[in-house]
Length: 175
Length: 175
Image (spheres, rainbow over the protein chains, first blue to last red):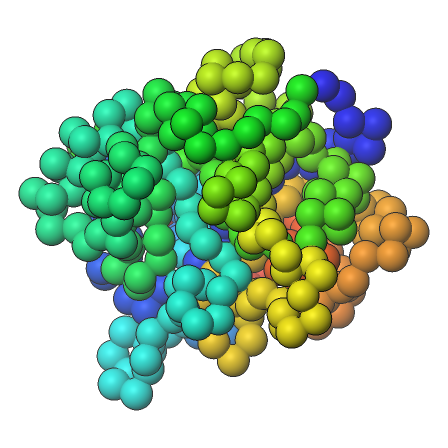
């Protein structure tokens, strides 16, 4: 399983725009359980970037804030980059960001794998999280979609659950 | 740097819809250098899922196709899930997917970290890749954005280059 076109590239982030960091950051930190790796405030351009990831997926220890910390952040795989364009949080004419799942489709979701989808959803219920699909909705049982505060979809699955769903519903074609 | 709300969750994928796997898969494989981890064809629902990731980021050896392979795919961090709804590739009325960066904004991009942005872009030039921003366009030198075949943006950066850009342009606020 080696690609002859292999380069030393790494997939390091997925960027989503957020309306208000005071709701988005607590969601990714306290509900999803990520940690904030670093924050960059571009004052002259009026935006901030927040990088979050799961602690267990981090490569190496975080250096102190500064250039080494930046290099470390951009060496991590699987981080979420949240972009806040200043002012949207208090702009009453701002109608919010597009999830990619409305009339115009594109980006679908990010996906998290959890040990137990039902246990995770019980926790999400306690925390007042919005759902697109509860684990027992529809034909694909044991698979949920929740929404972040901006309406982006987050798939919640377990390796066992998704393996069962794919065994029941899909042909697996690749060796 | 530990989150008291830490759960055993993993960020495993970012899903993007694609019009035509015969152009999208070669791009992610041959241009970006990823490998195809597995493919799932949902015949009754008329769609296929393709999972790709960078070989060097993989955790564990791939099991043979089947349920163990599925569990392995959904245990990987930083994979790309490409969703193909059958028929779009030959539907002349299909106008394509939305990148998240047009009039309706949301999802921005995925980002790859490369050893040398200029070398990567020289290679992308040879391969006929479309650009949103070449590395020397605009004020942020050494940072590029390319487009995948569906028009999704891919940021191309290096740890040194982004560290320089952030040092020059941003306040870093987090410890």
